[in-house]
Image (cartoon, rainbow, N blue to C red; front, side):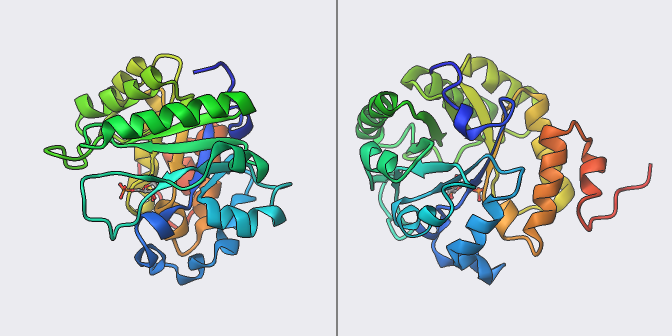
Length: 270
Ligand code: FBP
């Protein structure tokens, strides 16, 4: 981890990364709730929202769309990814090099590591190459740190998430993106384990406005420096509203109730 390596994808040390690698990771099913979002241009337009500090996409989408947005959007090049059609032990193909990502104008690179998978060793070796190449280009490195595989099924227990965050530090990530472990205390432990590596919360499947914003507030109260979110933004009927709410929560010190005023959810009575 290098100080300020994430500066290009953060604002005042906090990141709101819009993740849009779902067409690869999950397939078209993720676009069904808001079919317009199958069109990457819609999501690039969303990424121009002031709240968004970077857009995470794979190579093909970056190649096709980023040239029209490179003045307005910071590119987080998601280097590896595998489709949901793959039925083997968790693994992720490296789909583009850091050199090519830099050529396309990337501001940082992203890499999934499935700690605990039978493929952990090769993934860690691939991460090592990407991390060192990123250093040569002066690019920050974000690790999607998702322990899973063998006996570990998408585990979000506090101990597993603390380990996931620690893997980010141990392997040289500037930012570790981990699932929300369910409480502020558990997130605080993960943040402690990550040391200088910043921890951001992974958005998860779509939740109602209040629960989603409460989990973001819980994570940041535990020291998380923002979030990387996909479905909880682009699957909403009005993604701009939730981005307004996230901007208030992450960058303007708003409470959850105050942030909810940007959405159509009616705040609870006192
Ligand atoms: P979400 O906010 O939609 O959960 O996106 C975050 C993310 O890490 C994406 O970048 C990725 O496509 C997806 O989650 C992977 O989710 P999982 O592997 O847990 O199904």
